[in-house]
Length: 424
Image 1: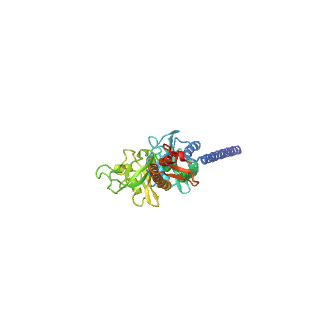
Image 2: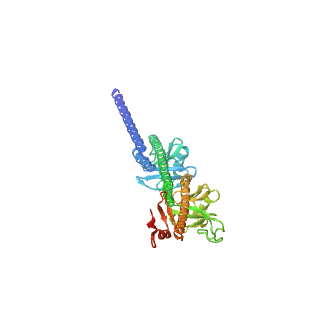
Image 3: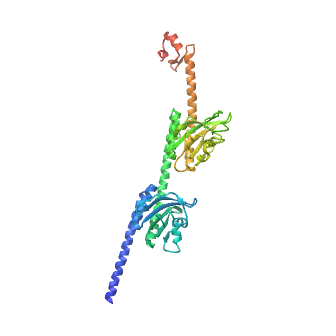
C-alpha cells in the first residue's frame, strides 16, 4: 500500500510537472506571438502573421480572419486558409453563423456539428466551410477596447476538436492581433497625413514660386491622384456658356441656353487627360453641381447610373465614380477640382483631402488666368511698339536703352540697322 501510494504520488507530480511545462511553453509561444504581431505596421502583415502564430498554437484544418460589418450586414474576408492554402472569398452577407454570433455578442463561439442544439448554427455559416460546414468551429472576436477589429475563426474536420484551453489561447492571440491592427491603422493614418502634408507643402511652394501656373495645375493633379488613389483627375474653370457647348447631353435641348455657363477643362491627368480642352455644361452634370450656386462638394460613386446626362463625356473618358470640390476665391466659385474612378468608393475623408488641394489650386487657377492675360497684353504691346511709325526706345534707370523699335534703330544707327544695335 505504501509503495502504491508513493508511486501514485510520483505519477501525480510528474503529471503536474508536465502540465506546468506545457503551460510555460504555451505562455512562451503567446509572448512570442505578441512580439511578432507588435512588429507589424501593416494590416495585411498583421493578418498573415496572425495566421502563422495560430498554426503554432492551435491545431486546425482551416482558418478565417474576417471583418464583419454589423451595420451593413456583410462580412469581408481578409484571409481564408484551408489546409495551409489561401482560398480567397468575396464579400458575403453576414448571415447567422458563428462569425456573426461572435461579432454580435463579443464572446467566443464554439460549435460541434454533432451537437443537435448547435448544428443549425454551424450549418448557417458559409464563411468557414470548404464545400460544406466544418464539424468543429471556434470563432473569437478581435476587440481593442470597445472596437471590433474583426473575428478570428478556426475549424477542423474532427468533432470536438477545440477544448477550453484552445478557447483561452485563441482569445489571447485575438486580443493581441486586435491591438496590432489598431496600431497598423493608426500608423497608416499617420502616414497618410504625412503624405498629405508633404503634398500640400510642395504644392503651396509651387503656387508661390512658379512662373508657370499651368505646371502647378498639373502638379496638383498628380498629387490628387496619388493621395486619393484615383485613376484620373481634372481641373475645370467656369466660363460664360455658348449655345453650342461641347460635352452637353445629346438630344433636345441641344445645348445650354445662351448666357448659360459651362466648365472648361483646362488640365487633366491619368484617365482624365483626354478631357483637356472639353466643355461641360454646369447645369445638370455631376461636376457642374460642384460649381453651381455657392458651390458644394460632390460625391457620386455611381455616375454611370445617370448615363450621359450626369457625365456627357463618357465616350471620351468613362467615369464610374467621381468626387469634386469647388475652387473658391474672393470672386466666388471659379471652377472645380475632380478625382475620378478607383476600385474603392470615394469617401467623405477623400472629399476633405480634395478640398485642401482645391484651396491651393484655386490660387493656381487665378494665377494661370492672370498669367495668360499678362502674356496676351504683353504680346499686343510688343506688336504695337514694333509696328509704330515713330522711333521709340525704352530706357532703364541709368539711361541705357533696354528696348527699341525698328524705326528708332533706323534713325539712330542708320538704314537697315536692327533694334538690338541700340541695346545698352
